[in-house]
Length: 292
Image (cartoon, rainbow, N blue to C red; front, side, top):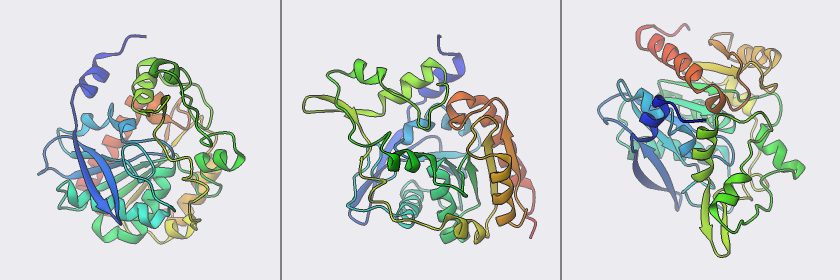
Protein backbone atom coordinates (compact mmCIF):
# COMPACT_ATOMS: atom_id res chain seq x y z
CA UNK A 1 0.00 0.00 0.00
CA UNK A 2 1.45 3.36 -1.01
CA UNK A 3 1.61 6.02 1.67
CA UNK A 4 -1.05 8.77 1.42
CA UNK A 5 -0.16 12.43 1.12
CA UNK A 6 -1.02 13.24 4.74
CA UNK A 7 1.46 10.64 6.01
CA UNK A 8 4.23 11.80 3.68
CA UNK A 9 3.71 15.43 4.71
CA UNK A 10 3.87 14.46 8.37
CA UNK A 11 7.08 12.43 8.31
CA UNK A 12 8.74 14.97 6.01
CA UNK A 13 8.15 17.55 8.74
CA UNK A 14 11.48 16.81 10.37
CA UNK A 15 11.51 17.18 14.16
CA UNK A 16 14.25 18.76 16.23
CA UNK A 17 16.10 16.43 18.61
CA UNK A 18 16.64 17.40 22.23
CA UNK A 19 18.07 15.84 25.37
CA UNK A 20 17.87 16.57 29.08
CA UNK A 21 19.46 14.85 32.08
CA UNK A 22 17.07 13.45 34.69
CA UNK A 23 18.63 11.80 37.74
CA UNK A 24 21.79 11.03 35.82
CA UNK A 25 20.13 9.53 32.72
CA UNK A 26 19.89 11.31 29.33
CA UNK A 27 16.28 11.67 28.18
CA UNK A 28 15.77 12.18 24.45
CA UNK A 29 12.79 13.96 22.90
CA UNK A 30 11.49 15.26 19.58
CA UNK A 31 9.78 18.59 19.02
CA UNK A 32 8.02 20.26 16.12
CA UNK A 33 6.72 23.72 15.40
CA UNK A 34 7.12 27.00 17.24
CA UNK A 35 7.96 27.21 20.91
CA UNK A 36 5.71 30.19 21.56
CA UNK A 37 2.58 28.09 20.98
CA UNK A 38 0.83 25.98 23.65
CA UNK A 39 2.60 22.72 24.40
CA UNK A 40 1.23 19.25 23.77
CA UNK A 41 3.38 16.34 24.98
CA UNK A 42 2.96 12.83 23.54
CA UNK A 43 3.90 9.85 25.73
CA UNK A 44 4.46 6.44 24.10
CA UNK A 45 3.53 3.00 25.39
CA UNK A 46 5.72 0.30 26.89
CA UNK A 47 8.73 -0.71 24.75
CA UNK A 48 7.74 1.93 22.18
CA UNK A 49 9.40 5.31 21.51
CA UNK A 50 8.85 8.93 20.49
CA UNK A 51 8.66 8.16 16.75
CA UNK A 52 5.36 6.34 17.32
CA UNK A 53 3.93 9.88 17.25
CA UNK A 54 5.94 11.26 14.32
CA UNK A 55 3.15 10.68 11.77
CA UNK A 56 0.62 12.45 14.03
CA UNK A 57 2.36 15.25 15.95
CA UNK A 58 3.02 17.46 12.89
CA UNK A 59 -0.74 17.67 12.32
CA UNK A 60 -0.96 19.87 15.43
CA UNK A 61 1.73 22.45 14.67
CA UNK A 62 -0.74 25.04 13.33
CA UNK A 63 -1.98 25.67 16.87
CA UNK A 64 0.44 23.83 19.16
CA UNK A 65 4.06 23.06 19.95
CA UNK A 66 4.15 19.23 19.87
CA UNK A 67 6.80 17.29 21.79
CA UNK A 68 7.27 13.50 21.96
CA UNK A 69 9.42 11.93 24.67
CA UNK A 70 11.52 8.77 24.82
CA UNK A 71 10.99 7.57 28.39
CA UNK A 72 14.10 6.14 30.07
CA UNK A 73 14.64 2.57 28.91
CA UNK A 74 13.05 3.37 25.55
CA UNK A 75 14.07 4.73 22.18
CA UNK A 76 17.18 6.89 22.24
CA UNK A 77 17.08 7.66 25.96
CA UNK A 78 19.38 6.08 28.54
CA UNK A 79 18.59 3.12 30.75
CA UNK A 80 18.16 2.85 34.53
CA UNK A 81 18.93 0.18 37.08
CA UNK A 82 15.31 0.41 38.23
CA UNK A 83 12.20 2.11 36.85
CA UNK A 84 9.30 3.90 38.54
CA UNK A 85 6.23 5.75 37.31
CA UNK A 86 7.10 8.70 39.53
CA UNK A 87 10.52 9.03 37.88
CA UNK A 88 8.99 8.81 34.41
CA UNK A 89 6.64 11.62 35.50
CA UNK A 90 9.70 13.67 36.49
CA UNK A 91 11.18 13.00 33.04
CA UNK A 92 8.05 14.38 31.37
CA UNK A 93 8.15 17.59 33.37
CA UNK A 94 11.89 17.98 32.70
CA UNK A 95 11.30 17.60 28.95
CA UNK A 96 8.54 20.23 29.14
CA UNK A 97 11.03 22.69 30.64
CA UNK A 98 13.90 21.76 28.30
CA UNK A 99 11.73 22.13 25.19
CA UNK A 100 10.66 25.63 26.15
CA UNK A 101 7.09 24.90 27.24
CA UNK A 102 6.34 27.71 29.66
CA UNK A 103 2.57 27.52 29.99
CA UNK A 104 0.91 24.31 31.27
CA UNK A 105 0.84 21.71 28.45
CA UNK A 106 -1.59 18.92 27.63
CA UNK A 107 -0.33 15.35 27.97
CA UNK A 108 -1.43 12.64 25.53
CA UNK A 109 -0.41 9.15 26.64
CA UNK A 110 -1.07 5.82 24.92
CA UNK A 111 -1.24 2.49 26.77
CA UNK A 112 1.50 2.45 29.43
CA UNK A 113 2.16 6.06 28.42
CA UNK A 114 -1.40 6.78 29.55
CA UNK A 115 -0.65 5.24 32.94
CA UNK A 116 2.48 7.39 33.17
CA UNK A 117 0.38 10.42 32.22
CA UNK A 118 -2.11 9.56 34.98
CA UNK A 119 0.69 9.56 37.56
CA UNK A 120 2.12 12.79 36.11
CA UNK A 121 -1.29 14.48 36.24
CA UNK A 122 -1.79 13.37 39.85
CA UNK A 123 1.65 14.58 40.98
CA UNK A 124 2.03 17.69 38.79
CA UNK A 125 -1.55 18.62 37.88
CA UNK A 126 -1.01 22.26 38.81
CA UNK A 127 1.59 22.44 36.02
CA UNK A 128 -0.62 20.82 33.36
CA UNK A 129 -3.62 21.94 31.33
CA UNK A 130 -4.96 18.42 31.11
CA UNK A 131 -4.24 14.78 30.28
CA UNK A 132 -5.73 12.60 27.56
CA UNK A 133 -5.45 8.90 28.37
CA UNK A 134 -5.53 6.64 25.29
CA UNK A 135 -6.59 3.00 25.74
CA UNK A 136 -4.90 2.59 29.11
CA UNK A 137 -6.70 0.03 31.31
CA UNK A 138 -6.48 0.87 35.00
CA UNK A 139 -8.30 -2.12 36.52
CA UNK A 140 -5.92 -4.74 35.12
CA UNK A 141 -2.18 -4.92 34.40
CA UNK A 142 -1.16 -2.71 31.52
CA UNK A 143 -0.89 -4.84 28.36
CA UNK A 144 2.85 -4.50 27.79
CA UNK A 145 3.70 -5.44 31.38
CA UNK A 146 1.33 -8.40 31.35
CA UNK A 147 3.01 -9.75 28.21
CA UNK A 148 6.43 -9.25 29.79
CA UNK A 149 5.48 -11.06 33.01
CA UNK A 150 4.19 -14.01 31.01
CA UNK A 151 7.47 -14.11 29.13
CA UNK A 152 5.88 -13.91 25.70
CA UNK A 153 7.31 -10.58 24.62
CA UNK A 154 10.05 -8.06 25.34
CA UNK A 155 12.26 -10.57 27.16
CA UNK A 156 15.59 -11.57 25.60
CA UNK A 157 15.14 -9.60 22.37
CA UNK A 158 16.80 -11.23 19.38
CA UNK A 159 19.57 -9.82 17.23
CA UNK A 160 19.02 -10.03 13.48
CA UNK A 161 21.75 -10.07 10.82
CA UNK A 162 20.43 -7.04 8.92
CA UNK A 163 17.88 -4.26 9.23
CA UNK A 164 15.36 -5.65 6.76
CA UNK A 165 15.14 -9.06 8.42
CA UNK A 166 14.66 -7.33 11.78
CA UNK A 167 11.83 -5.19 10.38
CA UNK A 168 10.07 -8.34 9.17
CA UNK A 169 9.84 -9.50 12.80
CA UNK A 170 8.21 -6.31 14.11
CA UNK A 171 4.91 -7.14 15.83
CA UNK A 172 2.37 -5.21 17.90
CA UNK A 173 1.91 -6.23 21.55
CA UNK A 174 -0.70 -7.16 22.53
CA UNK A 175 -1.43 -8.88 19.25
CA UNK A 176 -3.89 -7.23 16.89
CA UNK A 177 -4.28 -6.67 13.15
CA UNK A 178 -1.38 -4.46 12.02
CA UNK A 179 -1.76 -0.88 10.94
CA UNK A 180 -1.10 0.18 7.32
CA UNK A 181 2.20 -1.07 5.90
CA UNK A 182 3.65 2.44 5.57
CA UNK A 183 3.00 3.17 9.26
CA UNK A 184 4.30 -0.18 10.46
CA UNK A 185 7.49 0.09 8.40
CA UNK A 186 8.22 3.61 9.67
CA UNK A 187 7.70 2.62 13.33
CA UNK A 188 9.74 -0.57 12.95
CA UNK A 189 12.73 1.22 11.41
CA UNK A 190 12.89 3.63 14.34
CA UNK A 191 12.51 0.77 16.84
CA UNK A 192 15.89 -0.78 15.97
CA UNK A 193 19.57 0.05 16.38
CA UNK A 194 22.75 -1.56 15.18
CA UNK A 195 24.83 -3.58 17.64
CA UNK A 196 27.69 -6.04 17.40
CA UNK A 197 26.44 -8.88 15.24
CA UNK A 198 23.49 -7.13 13.64
CA UNK A 199 20.33 -5.22 14.61
CA UNK A 200 18.15 -5.40 17.71
CA UNK A 201 15.35 -3.50 19.45
CA UNK A 202 16.10 -0.26 21.31
CA UNK A 203 14.06 -0.89 24.45
CA UNK A 204 15.57 -2.18 27.70
CA UNK A 205 14.31 -5.76 28.26
CA UNK A 206 14.63 -5.18 32.01
CA UNK A 207 12.00 -2.42 32.13
CA UNK A 208 9.15 -4.55 33.41
CA UNK A 209 11.07 -6.86 35.77
CA UNK A 210 12.62 -3.77 37.36
CA UNK A 211 9.51 -1.56 37.40
CA UNK A 212 8.26 -0.48 40.83
CA UNK A 213 4.53 -1.28 41.17
CA UNK A 214 2.13 1.65 41.46
CA UNK A 215 -1.50 1.94 42.54
CA UNK A 216 -2.63 3.64 39.34
CA UNK A 217 -6.28 3.69 40.40
CA UNK A 218 -5.34 5.83 43.41
CA UNK A 219 -3.41 8.25 41.22
CA UNK A 220 -6.37 8.44 38.80
CA UNK A 221 -8.80 9.22 41.62
CA UNK A 222 -6.48 11.95 42.89
CA UNK A 223 -6.20 13.93 39.64
CA UNK A 224 -7.48 17.50 39.88
CA UNK A 225 -6.65 18.71 36.37
CA UNK A 226 -8.75 17.98 33.28
CA UNK A 227 -8.80 14.43 31.92
CA UNK A 228 -10.29 12.79 28.83
CA UNK A 229 -10.43 9.04 28.20
CA UNK A 230 -10.03 7.55 24.70
CA UNK A 231 -10.54 3.88 23.90
CA UNK A 232 -10.49 1.69 20.81
CA UNK A 233 -13.87 0.05 20.32
CA UNK A 234 -12.25 -3.22 19.23
CA UNK A 235 -9.25 -3.35 21.57
CA UNK A 236 -10.78 -5.46 24.33
CA UNK A 237 -8.57 -3.79 26.95
CA UNK A 238 -10.49 -0.67 27.86
CA UNK A 239 -13.94 -2.18 27.60
CA UNK A 240 -17.08 -0.16 28.36
CA UNK A 241 -16.95 -1.60 31.87
CA UNK A 242 -13.33 -0.59 32.39
CA UNK A 243 -13.89 2.91 31.03
CA UNK A 244 -16.96 3.27 33.25
CA UNK A 245 -14.88 2.32 36.29
CA UNK A 246 -12.21 4.87 35.31
CA UNK A 247 -14.94 7.43 34.70
CA UNK A 248 -16.26 6.79 38.21
CA UNK A 249 -12.80 7.26 39.74
CA UNK A 250 -12.73 10.65 38.00
CA UNK A 251 -16.03 11.64 39.60
CA UNK A 252 -17.79 11.07 36.27
CA UNK A 253 -16.33 14.38 35.22
CA UNK A 254 -14.41 13.50 32.06
CA UNK A 255 -15.38 12.79 28.45
CA UNK A 256 -15.05 9.19 27.30
CA UNK A 257 -14.42 8.85 23.55
CA UNK A 258 -14.62 5.53 21.70
CA UNK A 259 -12.71 5.45 18.39
CA UNK A 260 -14.69 3.27 15.92
CA UNK A 261 -13.02 0.30 14.20
CA UNK A 262 -9.94 0.85 16.38
CA UNK A 263 -7.92 -1.74 18.28
CA UNK A 264 -5.56 -1.08 21.19
CA UNK A 265 -2.91 0.56 19.00
CA UNK A 266 -5.44 3.01 17.61
CA UNK A 267 -2.79 5.65 16.88
CA UNK A 268 -1.52 3.24 14.22
CA UNK A 269 -4.66 1.58 12.89
CA UNK A 270 -7.02 4.60 13.00
CA UNK A 271 -4.67 7.61 13.00
CA UNK A 272 -6.96 10.15 11.32
CA UNK A 273 -9.95 9.27 13.51
CA UNK A 274 -7.67 9.67 16.51
CA UNK A 275 -6.41 13.08 15.32
CA UNK A 276 -9.97 14.28 14.72
CA UNK A 277 -11.08 13.23 18.20
CA UNK A 278 -8.03 14.79 19.83
CA UNK A 279 -8.50 18.06 17.95
CA UNK A 280 -12.12 18.19 19.09
CA UNK A 281 -11.17 17.73 22.75
CA UNK A 282 -8.40 20.32 22.54
CA UNK A 283 -10.72 22.82 20.85
CA UNK A 284 -13.27 22.39 23.63
CA UNK A 285 -10.63 22.81 26.34
CA UNK A 286 -9.49 26.07 24.75
CA UNK A 287 -12.91 27.67 25.22
CA UNK A 288 -14.67 25.93 28.10
CA UNK A 289 -14.31 26.12 31.87
CA UNK A 290 -13.67 22.87 33.78
CA UNK A 291 -16.66 21.58 35.74
CA UNK A 292 -15.81 21.21 39.41
